[in-house]
Image (cartoon, rainbow, N blue to C red; front, side):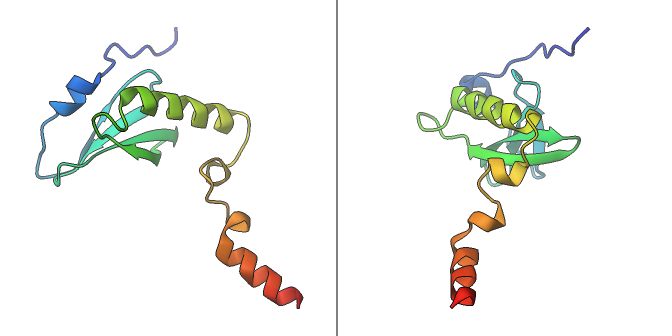
Length: 111
C-alpha cells in the first residue's frame, strides 16, 4: 500500500509552528515530498524533497502572498518534471548554459 500522509498542514497550522533555537523541518503533506523548514529567525520556507535527503527551496511562507496552496502546486509541478527525467537544475532554471554571465562569456569567445 502507498505511503499516505495523515496530516496535511494548512496555513493556520504553519502560522502556529513553534520557533526554536535550532532549524527544523516538518512534513506539510500532499504531496508527501513537501516540507516546511522553520528557522530560528522565524522564517518559514517550503522545500521539496526530490531525492532522499536532497531538498530544493521553492518559496518562503508569507501569508496572503505565498501559501500552502501555492507551495503544493509548485511542488507537484517540480515533481512531475523530475519524474519525467529532467535535471533539478534545469527545472529550477539554474542550468549554467542559461545563465546570462555564461552567455556573455560564450559570445565574447566567438569574436
